[in-house]
Every structure is written in C-alpha cells, then in structure tokens.
Amino acid sequence: MSNKAKKYLILSVPVVVVLILIAATCFCQVSTGYTAIVTTFGKVEDYTLEAGFHMKAPYQRIILMDNREQKTPFSTQAFSSDIQQVDIVGSINYAINKSTAMTLFKEVGTDYFQKLINPRMLENTKAVFSKYTAENLVSAREELSVQIRDNLSQEMEKYGINIISVSIENLDFTDAFTDAVEAKQVAAQKKLQAEIEQEQKTMETQQQAERQKIEAQAKADVLKVNADAEAYSTRTKAEAEAEANKKIAESLTSELIEFTQVQQWNGELPAYVSGAAAEALPVLSLNALNSADEDAN
Image 1: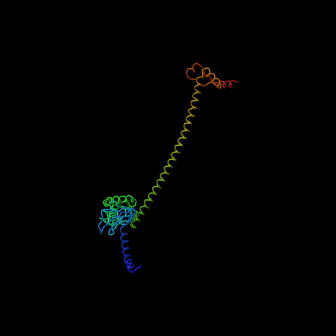
Image 2 (image 1 turned 120 degrees about the horizontal axis):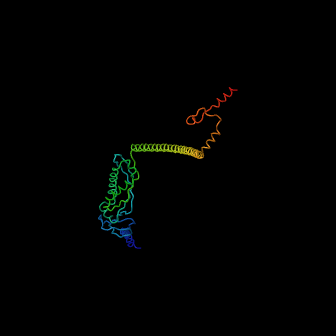
Image 3 (image 1 turned 90 degrees about the vertical axis):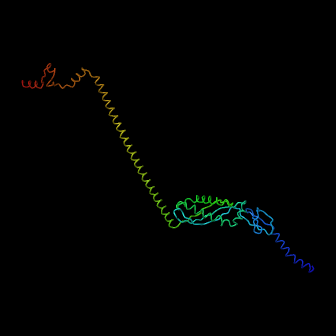
C-alpha cells in the first residue's frame, strides 16, 4: 500500500466513526410502559413516541415519562382536633396518563411528584387528620386513607395524574398520649371485668332465687296435694258415715226400737217419770221393795 493510500485510510477512519455515532443518535428505543417526549433544541414537539424503535434527528432529545403505577413512601407530622401531635408513615400509589404526559412535562417537568403530588398530599393529610381526635385516629386509618386519596385525586386530575391509593401504614403518638391511652384501656378493661363479675353474681343470685322459688313451689304443691288427699279422705269417710246412718235410719221401726230397748234394759225401772207417763204408770222403786222384804223377814 502506498503512502497516499495509508494517509487516506487514516483520515477516513475518524470520519467513519463520526458517521457511525451520528447514525446511532438517529435511532431510539422506548420501553413498554413509557411515553417518549421529543424535544428539539429544548422545544417540546407536539407528538410523543410509544414503545418500540423510532428514528429521530441527531439534535433531538428523548425524555421518557413513566406511565406505570408507581409507589412512593412518605412521612410527615400532623395534629389531631384535640391538638395531639402524631407522626405519620405511609405510601401513595399513582400513575400518569399517556395522553397528557407531554402536557405534564411542559408544565411541570419530570419531577412532578416532588413539585405537585407530595406537597398537596401532605397538606391534605394534615387537613384530614385535624378533623379527628387522637383516639379516633387509631381506629380510622382506612377512612383517613380514602379521604386523603379522594381529595388529592380531585386536585391531580387536571394534570393527568391518577391517584390510585393512599395508605396510612403507621401512626406514632407522643409518649404522654400513649401512656394516657394505655391507662384508659386498662381502666376500661377493669370496668368491663367488674361488670362481667357483677353480671355473673347477679345471674347466680337470680338462679339461686329461682331454685328457691321452685323448691318452695314444689313444697307448696306437695302440701296442697296432701291437704287435698286428707280432705278427700275426710269427705269420703263422712259421706260413708252419713250414708251408713241414712241406711240405719231408714231401717228403724218402732218395734225394732222397743226390742232394742228391751234388749238393753238392765231390769231397773226409772225412779221418776215425767209427763203423761207419770199419770198412767206408777213408778216403783224395786230397790225399796227389796229393802222392805228384807225388813219383813
């Protein structure tokens, strides 16, 4: 190879390298989930590039805007309605619309989270927390998250930012408030325990009284049964005696009465007889006659 050819080859190598580099800058790749913003000398073009390979001018620049759902943690402080300080730890899930990515870049840039989302989210968080007492905040984390998300969604909608969710992951109160809550919970537990014990005692007393009532009723029923049985026995016996006397009375005649009297007479006449019998029948004392007979002998 001649010196002239060598010289030409040496001069052509840098040119080829430059041409290759220039050619490389004419192609770009956009990954799935991104929207490419095209700028020409800093000016934003009125079109965007979707996922895939694209050609562009070497002097144009490609800025990728992430359209995927993104999650960013945050932490802040707020005050409850009863002026209790609470440290908040949470996270926010959001995504930007492809159709408005170019406008968002023009008006805000790629740092839209720090410039738009985060300040408004912290402000809304403090506003929502100020509506609740510190004690109610503990049990209302889901409700708080929904309110913050709804408020923030209304403000971010005009920028093409979708607020998917806000999660309140941890709440940390001052030691004084935590001790007060624990003391209140202990007192509530003791009160509940006392109420349970009192209810138990009341129930036992009621059960004992019910048992005594049942026993007393059972005794009264037994006494009533015995009394009814005795009354029935007495009534039956009286009815039997009355029936017997009735039958005896129905069977009596004057002859039977006289015969019975004769059978039962001891042989002595009555010493005195009154009424009509006294005029018709002289009454003799057999005892006196016997005495007279003895005297005569």
